[in-house]
Structure formats: structure tokens, C-alpha cells
Length: 129
Image (cartoon, rainbow, N blue to C red):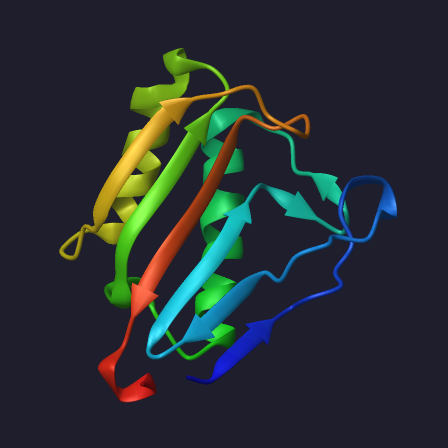
């Protein structure tokens, strides 16, 4: 089995090195690490709607870099800091997955950085096996 890592060695909040790959591909599967609304090492502000959009754009950028798209995503994990944000988050999320919704889990969790949402996913493409 061939394993390919994408984006290792990036920087997080405060410029700290991140000790994990942004994504790992193995036998057609792509595992995307949890993404937040981070840009240039800082969280983008503006509430749950703005953070969800930026987080999804970060997920899409990683998928694209690895040669995958949202239509290839089979499972998504979502962590929300505040459960009251669920319906606003869900509205933005639905805009991205429209006709190809993946399986999903969504839970409330305290975050490791000062953000409102974190999203990870698993994608699959048979032509990448």
C-alpha cells in the first residue's frame, strides 16, 4: 500500500508548527485532518457563518490539492463549540454538499483553539487506488 501525505509541517495559531499532515491518502481513501477557519495562522472572525464558510473552503482546498472533490466525500465529522450554532452552521454546510451529502456526525465540543467549528472528512476515489 502506498501512503501519501499532504501539507505536513504547516503552521498553526501563533506560528506553532503543526505535528500532523493536512491529509493522508492510502489506497484511494483520503483522510483530511480537522480544519478550522484559519488563515495565515489566525482564526477568521465573523461568527459561525463566516467560520463555517472559511472552514469548508480550507477542506475544499485540501481535497483539490489531493485530486478529490466534495462529491468524493463519504463521511464528515463536525465539532461545534456552541450547540446554538447548529442551524446556522447546517444552512451553510448544506450549500456545499447539495446533491451529494455524505454521512456525518456532529457533536458539541470544547475547541483546542478559539474557534466555533472544526470539520474533518474522509473521501474515496477508486481511480486513486
